[in-house]
Length: 616
Image (cartoon, rainbow, N blue to C red; front, side, top):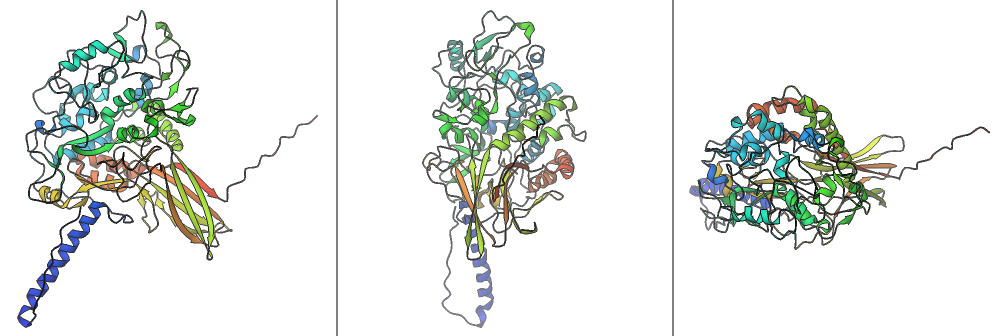
């Protein structure tokens, strides 16, 4: 948003006014600086690479927030008759169900060192922030009966080990009525008993409805099943992509309940997201009312995947038609097999007549945290789950290699070569997506001479230092959130990009590539619209041009993905307390290694195969 500019006219000058003029010039310079910040906040300078500098702790933080400031509708703590459990699931379920979940980032949500370092920062920025963060990362503890705001010290080893426990998802009730399934009447009763109902057109921030009893829901009707209560539900099913994906959207859209849209923020300024009155919940939890931290579900919801699906056999697993539509179609790989041990006479899922076996790997792009969770320096390290964690990291690498396609074209231009790199988004959401802080993709382009000498490079990354060189031609796909000048003054930090996610109230940059089905109109909303980039209707790719020496005979483009940048880890190490310091030590050894997503080469390599000779 643009800062107001003041203009001052000097009508006459004499010797006695020299000092006044100098002060006036200084004042104008300060105003121009503020205006520059405003342009950056509005994303006017699309080519600018805004550098995030770790912020220092402000004297007036944390904000005096309370448990009430983090209130969100849905089932509340103490609202469950039967507690959340996970400890009995391993006794019956096969590896594609329990072990896959155990190694997933959902299973490890309570142990994640990046989360705990960010959590320490959030608590220092806003008191009682545990009420917000632990709602997703430690739901077993969050839903228990308690009188005070939840904090990390309140968690038991069982709470931490449970992560996003099995019975959280399998006891979730669809906030949208109308299903014709085995829990339709029961779910209607549960929704009617809520004291505060979540929106039915916006699914986010763990505004969950949970069955108070241990009535478990799944995709299949199980006849003569007596081991636990099991009901077939649309919400946990495989036949309605919109309903099934709503379940994922419950946590994979994230709002900040502290910040509501305010047309007239106190003290003036442009309309912006602004803190609510302290010790009070937000007035509304609907679409676009709260500051959008993440919008993975909404990105999917406004794509072709949500309206009939896309032919993408690389993601479809054992689905015979190769169509992927729901979040689960990609992230819970559709497999064949059984969900329970043979002792229990399970139905074989063949992905044809009996449905698919949904592997509970919940695979994304996180290859680093599963590895560092095995580091003994981390207070919540988890060596017993090493094999499951290693499998998760491997599956994430495989997933990343399917996420994008690179095309490379080269033209001669006045003695130089004009290179165009096209990155095609093959996913059902923006590329990249999810938690914005420290997460990025970039293009590395190298041009070589005929002798193999490196003539040109853009996007150079030093694995020894973890530093990405941001040259004038680099393309980095990322989100940068930050503080407006008014919000910065309010909290006592610098305006511009920051990693203070509990305080950030504006999006400064979002040039991520949209999915198939993108339209300008559908994405013209907070958290969805591009900032510092332009995409046309139907565009799910991005082109970047480079000029390299004409003597280049070989050109290689590589798309990299990194979960956590060195800049972000430095921030967490500085301000994230003991956990942040430990994370910083671990990062120094491994540095969240960038993963190769896609590569292209010019000229296209010719692969030749020599025939095997066979003696008569």
